Length: 315
Image (tube, rainbow, N blue to C red; front, top):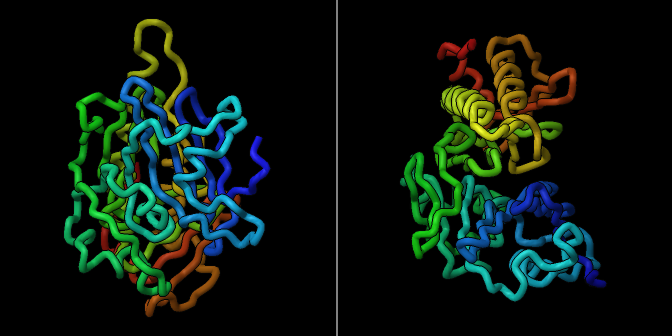
């Protein structure tokens, strides 16, 4: 194993997919980055780009995500790097444009970068400094030009080889939020739509009402996919698992989706009490903590008020 200290750690989730966690970043985000190796396409699909290796640990020597992927030995990969020498091509997908998901993106210049086409204006060059939160944090915006893809888009290499992963538009956290579904491995990647044990955060540009619609879509999608899995001849078993942009990975998707939806429904219905209030980016924000500790929330108060004018889904 390498004697160098890295800002990242990688663990195997499935036969082809690894979780890369940036575990000690200066923003305390601890983002999840996912790398799916597609040998048939000689490609590695990387989901989100993290915080650019900006670690609070002064002893960290490997701060480049690309260097980590191409050179750093991973115990769960038989001691080999995930993409030794960069021999495989890259496809990059951003689940949304917030800074803690894009700061290493320039390291992969020349590779296709996919993002949601749901709200093109949200990802326009003039809007990105604000919507990435880079301007409010005094960060230099990484330069990149995403290819905006539609809901249901199936990701292929430039040569046309399928990766087995498709894009689902799931706005709410942000207008450009997307999820990915890997049908082969029954894995759903949901970015910052939700996660457990850490505070779910909505920015000023989010919408709880739209979030509920996306949650209903994903719950229905997973219910159907679970039924399909159980009905496949040959004895397939198991269920769809969920992987988030922070904290949560390899959890039963339906359980987590339903739990998060129920918690936010109680927030909107006034059954959860506000724990704290303070101003963030010029807006009064409110915090809620579920007694069990599974879910918590911080969002602009106006988003709760807006959601209260809508009918909260009850199914």
